[in-house]
Length: 174
Image 1 (tube, rainbow, N blue to C red):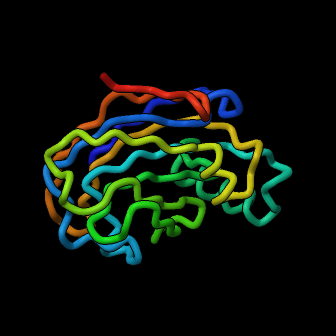
Image 2 (cartoon, helix red, strand yellow; image 1 turned 30 degrees about the vertical axis):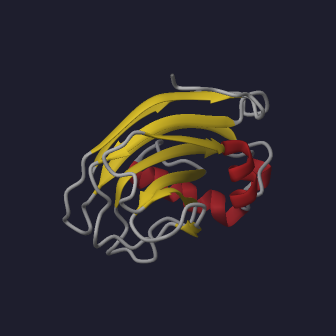
Image 3 (cartoon, helix red, strand yellow; image 1 turned 60 degrees about the vertical axis):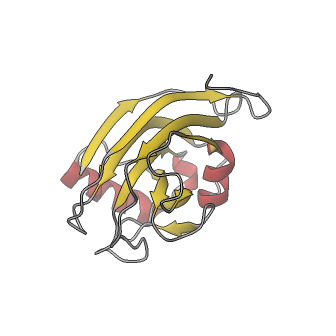
């Protein structure tokens, strides 16, 4: 797995829509987001959040504290993964096979656009509300990855042009 992460601070109330371009040489063949053994993606974009403690129950706060004691402070309260999948249609949403505080959202699927730059727009604020019920989530990190550690396949992906815009803003990558 190759991952590049950076902290970000974005006011999702003003600029909730994440835009980017990405490409893959090919989708993975053996990946299956329903299983741990298949939890791989030719390309994925992570957005990680902190949530108000009032929205996290005692057990969840304890679980997150334990995870952070093992893995460090980089463990977020919640995360969305926009993925280039191999089998599920665009807009499919599923829980992550490993982490119950991570949700997978298929942003591109299949081989039809492999080898091409594909433009993507997702309303991150709407997605975090839909997946975690939080209107006060604070975006803290943006990451990109190519992930083949479970299927042992190879992936090559490119990412470009990340930016946040207002909900109704038109944007062109030209």
